[in-house]
Each structure stands twice: as C-alpha cells, then as structure tokens.
Picture (tube, rainbow, N blue to C red):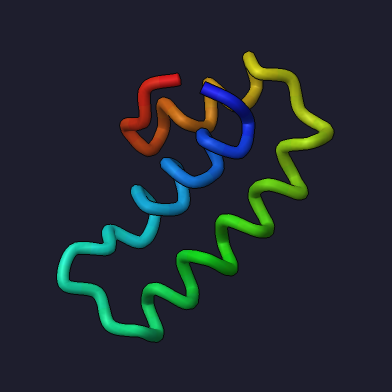
Length: 58
C-alpha cells in the first residue's frame, strides 16, 4: 500500500464509518487529510506500526 492508501485505511478504522452520519464522514475526511500530511515525513515502517494499532494490514 502507498502512504495515502494507508492514511485512508487508518482514518476509516479510526472513525468506523458504518452507518456514519455526514458529520462523521466529514471528520473521517479531515483525519485522512491530516494523516496524509503527517505520513509524508514518516517511513513506511513507522506507518505500518501505526496501522497495526488500528488493525490495518500494511
């Protein structure tokens, strides 16, 4: 996975979008954007460690 794909998967795991309201979807997208920016400075190993905390396979 790319860094952006991992950011998306992690943001979904963080917000658990099942039956989510529009506010929750908006928050998920905000989280995704923040993670994309943050992940640019991290190694893939670091991101994989974060992903594993949320049950996301890197």
